Amino acid sequence: MKDLTLGSPTKAILAMAIPVAAGMIFQTLYLLVDLYFVAALGEDSVAGVGTAGTLLFMIMALTQVLGVSAVALISQAVGRKDQEHANLVFNQSLVLSAVCAVITLLGGYLLAESYLGSITADDAALREGLTFLYWFLPGMALQFAMMAMASSLRATGIVKPAMIVQVLTVVLNTILAPILIAGWDPGPALGVLGAGLASTISITVGVGLLTLYFFKVEKYVSFSPALWRPRFDIWRKMMDIGLPAGGEMLLLFVYFSAVYWLIQDFGAPAQAGFSIGGRIMQSIFMPTMAIAFAVGPIIGQNFGAGKADRVRETFNSGIILSSIVMFVTTVIMQWRPEVLVMFFTEDAEVIEVGAVFLQLISLNFVAQGIVFTCSGVFQGLGNTRPALLSSGVRVLIFVPIAVYLRYQPDFGINMVWYVSIVSVTVQAIVSFLLVCREFVRKLDTSENELPVETERAL
Image (cartoon, rainbow, N blue to C red; front, top):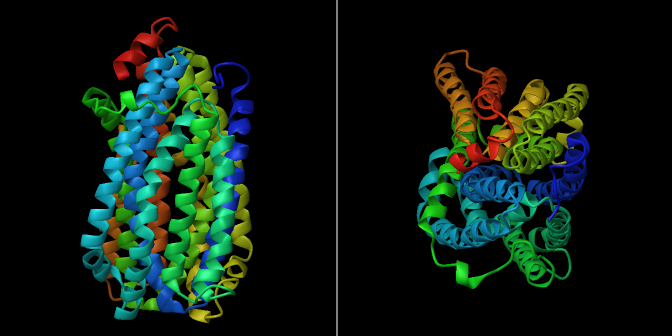
């Protein structure tokens, strides 16, 4: 366990964010390698995998329920020096991860075809998307156990073990991708099936390595079968914190699904261009997401310890750091974004869609960094409803306006990106104001009263 209530908050953010970012850089490399080999299969494969990938936001929504609630409850318990409660929450998160895994497998195999059929450009893309998804679903289900373990470590201030495991699994995935997708010796050329299978194999190995770490090394929180009996009081607390965060990710699922629906009339090349641009954008977001991941447990431990000034200082440092990172990436994207897209495809129409998407959407990168940081603050404070509210504002702005424009005679694909810029900018403003409101509600009290307030939040 690492005490995050001491020292400089900025240094604490960087100390945690750098290893997390390193793991995410390897994740980025995997995403790009995977995309490279899938893109070689053709635009139908890219469009199919892209549309199937929107379901990952649904899974991420459920994993957020576990991850965010574990970080909030465990980090606040660490701040109160309550190891027993931290260990109880960890073990209950493992039980919930098993429940969510079963739900994922059942829902995925039963409903995938109906969902993808509603947003996919054509039958060929639909077939590719279903093939990829059916082989990736077991890996999606295992994400819950990985999230429960990694988030619990992060709540105690430990990030390197999860980062190392992530790097190892990404290396494995990067090795398997060309073997199983393209048929490099000695593997068969399985196409998008190979992409899904490679991901599932690597995630399985990652879960096994993290499990081994908990058995051999971790002592502050550990596997305790005696604590696996369902504690519905703990589940209620986790749901109270986690469901709004899951709802926030679910709204992203709605957003990306809406985009695919809005642009489907432009054909598979447009969806392929958006798929490539979206993957690149997700990779770009990883450093600022690492900052947000660090902000959450630091806020949580200091809130649990009653150190209001350090909570505010952590928020300010997170905003500054994320804004710097996102400003630099915005400048890069305004230069020649087509170079990045051209690495994955030679199709001129796909390149144009992806490049214009990146150039325009980068105008809200700084705003997106602010949103990520604010979400980390809400998680640390143990109240994620404001994050859900700000995401709801984004969707309520984007969807009605974009749908209205779709039915206008002069509708163009770039109109979708402009509406997205406006919606994310408004979301950032709303998120910032909601953080200020939470500080007034929870921090404008004496430091001696803060631990009591923390207990009430639980």
